[in-house]
Length: 191
Image (tube, rainbow, N blue to C red; front, side, top):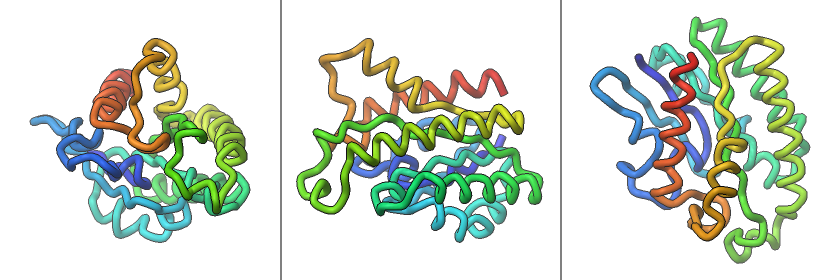
């Protein structure tokens, strides 16, 4: 099985070593996961590099995970919605199986100093919840595979209230990436 993971810093693994990233952790003798995450990228950027980073890799599956940077930049959730919609249809056009992915929740209060000066993280969190809801509806309406990292990681957070899985309130620690990899493995059993 060959899978491309197209996304932003969540996919790229901002702040952790390459071999600690969830995409890298999923590589095994019978499967190849290709990391096409770019820190700071938006869903518009993902769409712009779709052919180069997804189609040209000729994967079986295409994980799509993004949208937070769009919202940090101040756009409404309708922009990443339109871009996800286009990427899903581009995937089908190129005979790729799209997998809709939400991103893990983040803590606006723990976000890196200075970030709150150019965006309202409470508003971003609210808009991301709306985007997540829409993504899950899109997956249901089209019968798409999906991985709800947001919902699954919330469970982990509630079961481990004293543990910190974030580097800066947004990006995950190596242990957080291990949890994400296990979430993917559980989801793959249903594909």
